Image (cartoon, rainbow, N blue to C red; front, top):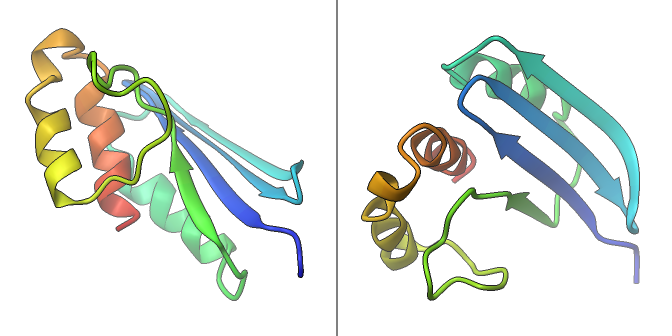
Length: 104
């Protein structure tokens, strides 16, 4: 079995950071700063990864509420629940969710 390849994202209020991990080792890193619109940088990153097999995309979220204490799959129901938490982190959670949306 080959090691997992994961893209780890952190789309914040003014930057986008990403790392590619293979078998637990960080092999590539990106940092786009001074941007509130992550679509362009994320599209550039995904183009850079074209042809790369990804087993999953992991995204750091600033706030998942009292229910979310560990990693979860963000399906439609979870995405809607996270949207209700935007008032708890209005500067960061919208950008986090935009990063999630761009990867689905």
